[in-house]
Image (cartoon, rainbow, N blue to C red; front, side, top):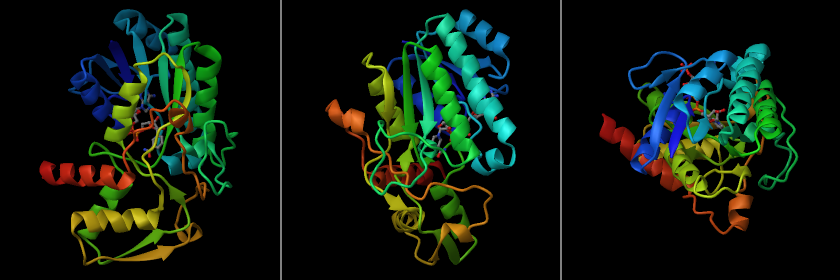
Length: 291
Ligand SMILES: NC(=O)c1ccc[n+]([C@@H]2O[C@H](COP(=O)([O-])OP(=O)(O)OC[C@H]3O[C@@H](n4cnc5c(N)ncnc54)[C@H](OP(=O)(O)O)[C@@H]3O)[C@@H](O)[C@H]2O)c1
């Protein structure tokens, strides 16, 4: 398939484009700014340009990973969050609908309020509690309303070697500090961009459009995630201190429990995501190899 990927130089986009190519797809890398690896420069806030890009490139499928992902930035500037995540997605979805191009929209666990104590399925009602989550949900709604052929894929706690992420930050801090406070009362499923990309590629094999949760197996707190990161990296000089989220300096109210259950994949008998610890081990090996 000929697949156009928005946000192609982002953390997920970079790995996804590589794996798509490795599995035989033709990839058109679209990025907001000019970039050595990009095929197309596109600001999704420009609807005419979005439309023209799709008319020129004629992809068989579009994977929309571009977003304003800075959660605290979204909280401080909700209009920017809605501009990029809601209106930008609306533009991409409208252009796809007009040209009958199936779309994959990457969404988030932050569409949920975190009040459940068991994993969220695709059939649980969203109820975002911050502007990032609300703007991403608005993006989901645009895709659902405008595109007949869509996959909405909610994922969470992403980490990959091509972007800023939690385990990467813990390893950086461990080079400078012996003690680190880490939030202990928020739980999720850490998911690598590689595991997500592999699962996305399999998803594209079937025209079973709809909403999917794709996250690695298992769950943990940020504290346990940090512990495992240090353990796998062989770092023992750092003492982690568990703190409640309210002590973490952030303007954003985050869901306390947002574990995603891959319920639709389970029902379809094709839930083969790896455990988060296994994905983390692969990430740490790749980081070591990069040095
Ligand atoms: N990271 C997570 O933990 C997480 C969790 C759940 C869901 N997600 C979702 O997964 C997707 C990928 O996340 P990520 O962490 O890989 O994001 P990322 O590294 O921040 O990449 C996002 C990309 O979007 C591009 N972008 C922003 N505004 C744009 C615009 N107006 N026009 C075109 N491109 C624009 C950015 O380009 P520039 O760099 O040029 O600005 C960037 O390359 C996002 O949809 C996100 O909401 C992420």
